[in-house]
Length: 313
Image 1 (tube, rainbow, N blue to C red):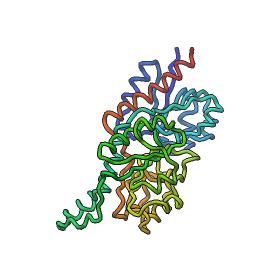
Image 2: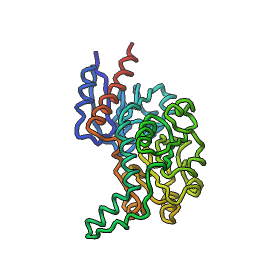
Image 3: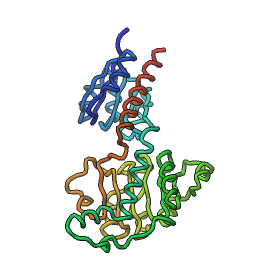
Image 4: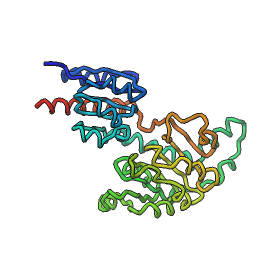
């Protein structure tokens, strides 16, 4: 029997041995690539039976040039790198890994929240620069009794809600697709986005990047927020209109931001966020731990293999 072929469009991992083991055990061949353009993706994947994808764009033009592809499996929860509608039109399955890094991302979001509220970064910098003065942290407000607003209420948000509640933080959430009964079970009130912006002391974004959510938080929403609100984003940079965020930070409409993601990654060297003392920036790492990376790689490979093997039946 001829081996099926799975191409990795691009990857940042040190090794693909986990994927290779899964695919070769199932009778397939793994072909690693580092595609930077759509043309490179087309050339690499034209005759592939399946694709593993990290960041390379797989748009309609790519999909229309795939001769026998049965599945595009993404390393991650979001599928914003893939034209899902075009894939569906060409009978190509799109798979993701929705159940990995739940603890990692919720932990990271909460770490950013606490670091911002307790002024960890500026205080650390001041001490290292020879200044021993607690007043540099002023004003600082108590966590207990404050309100965390969650934009999106999936598994990661729900995990974060439980962690925040252990600190005595009230939690509200905006998610038009989430059942109210399920939120009530976690003692979380579902509200509209305007209410969330008005009531929250901290807002943490956990929505996927779609046409509906692109720029979801913009000037209008920032104008509703308290001037001591902190914005946290560990989902996708595009959910927040970045120019509006920068303006809100510059004018003091909000107190600060903790961002693991930005609109354009890697962040551009002239991005004003890099020079703001009230902003913590991380390189899209919230998902990462040794354990979560291994789980992601294995599940993404298994997703592709399962579709290909089932298509032969």
